[in-house]
Length: 502
Ligand code: NAD
Image (cartoon, rainbow, N blue to C red; front, side):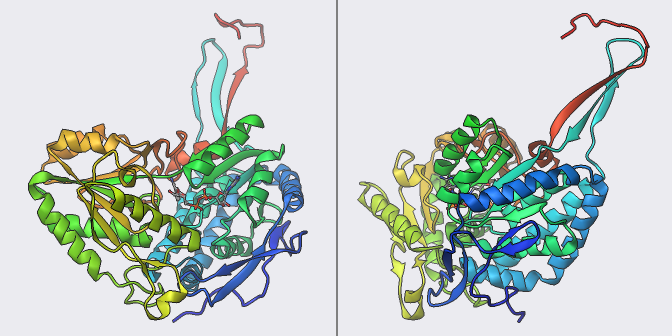
């Protein structure tokens, strides 16, 4: 087995202007393995506004040079980074499992997503297309082009600690921006690994900087800084709203990717075995801590009883354990607060009159599991749409099963939450699949597949309280990280006036 990539260093530093520099505060945050908190993964800076000031200053200065580097040259560095990531994939996956708990096959997927994004965006370096069009007047030329924006402040969550930073860093760089990234407190190491690969590939000093620390310190300082022109945030809806408000106060461009309450709809004609695999993977993969996790399952009443019992039986058999053990199905949740929040939601569900808890519902503490934060996979049946467990994002291995009368009823339930990230339908009827695809209010929709699994060349993001209209992935992400400039060239050599001269 490959060794972890990170050298055992007692203290990691910030990365500013191409140098590893200690935080001014001299304080650090411990990063411990959530599967076994006896293991210290590393100590990472508890940075302050002073560190942000230094990093943003450097990024603002470097922007003037980086924006002038031709995009295909910028992209060449990304291609090199892709090769480095491939070589270190296994080691990076192991590091990620140690710092955040998800099983190795999923952390390999997380690193692979970053590799795919690296090659995809590197290709875009030769395709930052604008367009030309006909002008209103003779001897006048009209066109538009993408321009870089400036310093981008990136704030990322802990659950996809390499994939999500890659979705932001790479398009920001290829478009000619400079970056200051603040990784999540719980999972800085994977972001460090990604940034190290980019720096080794040749990203010039000052173009890409990391300032690690707490949201209320580093995040807040990035949001307030006048030289940060754009903030791209992924995280909870609660924090996203704070980010959006702060950006409005300082006229920043702001892209928000936030929480979800995703749904799988299972019709009476569905292949129930296939649907079962989709629900298990969607609800309990990454221990239910995906923004796209399937936390609601809406089943047609004709097959609801049968399906629910199939689901509970399989959920009981899932093996909890450390993600580095290849036999583990479900790893730990990220930290103590998360396990407490999840168990609070279990209590809320148990107190509901009608809902029945069919399995799970406890912290698992047998043997060495007591050293980590393990919560048993939990299934509630007979859940009604208004209940809190069917409305709020739990972000843990808890799934609610609701019954529906027909497709229209399923769609009504699917749309009856404030979020709009991902949804899926299991049916053999293509008419119903298309009907649902059109009427369900989410940014991502699956047919006969679970609610999870994004491909980098398609747009990723949600509607309603999940996002603010932007999309990551696909060529759509370039719209976040570049600004359009319209250019008119009058070569008539005389004064010409359009009908409306604004
Ligand atoms: P979080 O909102 O607690 O934190 C996200 C980031 O914001 C972290 O880096 C944190 O330090 C920072 N932050 C916290 N308070 C801040 C403040 N006041 N100012 C500036 N920054 C601040 O989220 P999390 O627990 O890391 O991640 C889980 C959440 O992320 C879930 O809600 C999940 O659905 C969501 N998520 C969404 C997507 C998506 O693409 N829609 C993807 C992954 C995760």
